[in-house]
Image (spheres, rainbow, N blue to C red):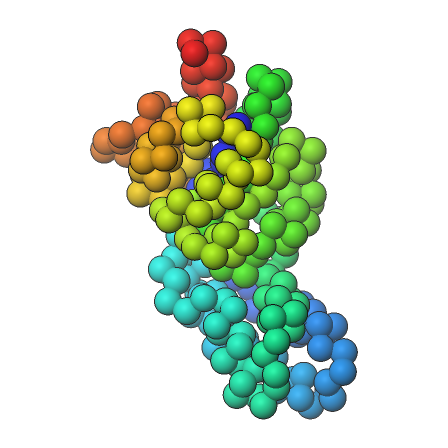
Amino acid sequence: MAMVDVGGTLWPNSWPFRETDAVGRRQRIAAAMPALEPAAIQALADDLISSSRPGDEARSISTEMEIVVKAEVLIANSLARQGLPADPQTVTRLRRAMSIPISDRMRPLPGARELLAEMHALGMRTVIASNTYWRDADSYWDDFQLLGLAEHIDAIFTSVDAGHLKPHPAVFEMAMRWAGSPPDRCVVIGNKEENDILPALALGMRAILVHPDDPVPASSRANAVAPDLWACAAVLRNMLEAS
Ligand SMILES: [Mg+2]
């Protein structure tokens, strides 16, 4: 099984936050709260959008932002300020409403599709293992469908689904349970030594550090380092043939 990171690995580390992103959110928040009056919906949307601004701004700098308040907590606090009940179903609906679909101008990093296709050609299962703020697996499926990558992805596990951010092992452990694969049959591919490579090695997996959207790393404990996703596909093939 191959577990693949997303930001800085399959798509860019960052992209600009657009003012129009907030428009789509207001429409989705309204759809998520059908029983609310328009004024109450607007007050809730104002509160959610203004209180989540630091996270949105962080996204324009890096997808690996420091998360201070989890999305669920931020939403529950916002609902409480509006005097609305924060049951788990409502919180989940609002989290999905806040997840901005990827831009129609966004493109995967070069070689992303070919890398995922090569994994399938090698008989590997391909699993997305990603740190996210709003996105769960369902939101990501929509993104990958839009990018034309979904056909080469078998499963998706995010930190929202797992309840912990990488480098915590929860995302990788969820994927291993799903696949029924022991660690020595797993390889992690990612762009961050601390979040992708070190937890993989600690679990007894192999790891490939890629830097298609990052500076050349000074050093790495990964089994291999690849400058781009084409090179990563070649490394993966060699790795499998050698074992
Ligand atoms: Mg990354």
